[in-house]
Length: 290
Image 1 (cartoon, rainbow, N blue to C red):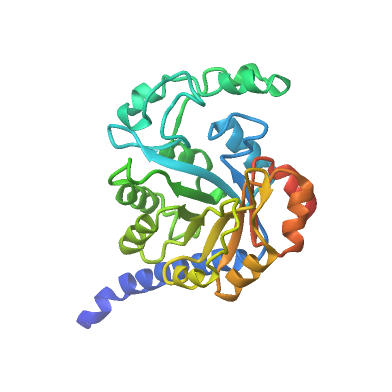
Image 2 (spheres, rainbow, N blue to C red; image 1 turned 90 degrees about the vertical axis):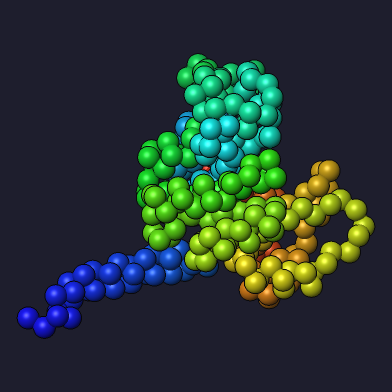
């Protein structure tokens, strides 16, 4: 047998795998041409944010992406938690990064929701733990897509490398199952250097003032990101404009708007041809898009 033929089955396998990975990523980008329903910390209007019940509600509703903020525990585990500190949504205090995973998962991240929203209270929410990203991936696997934020990267050194390692371990990038967003351009560039094919979104905050928007700066974002995540309101005032959306799209950027919970606002943004919305109530948005 000629020497090169001994390697032919391996070459066929590698080529087939590479083609499958390319097709999966291409399918993800194709799907992003349609309007995206992004469940903000899960269905967090009806269950405690970033907990399993919130994620399960969002997944069952048919949301396109489960959105979560990712940080590092003191012992290097990736955890799904929004705030830099624990006290708003748990019975703990202090910075999340000061505690190891075992300690964090002894906290109660559900009872606060029952107290804040007694009309939605559920005994099953009491004692809900902080989730590790590994637990989320093991629960939903490739049956869901994930929209993850590198949260407070200045407070979470090493977050980008740890996240890419986890995404590769579960084949989330190759299978077209994930987008990563951040307010930090530096964090996104670090992710791009680690994994060039990882879809990225630059988060922006439009303030409630009379300063003109720097629409030309949107062109720079196309160098490393497929889109922008931008707020609809600031201080109860609508700050996003239809012109901003059109300009971003002209630059080749998708526009995903956060966090939109009233159907009137949702319909406005659908009419403005936003590419997707983050919402605490994915079922409300799905009523308008299905």
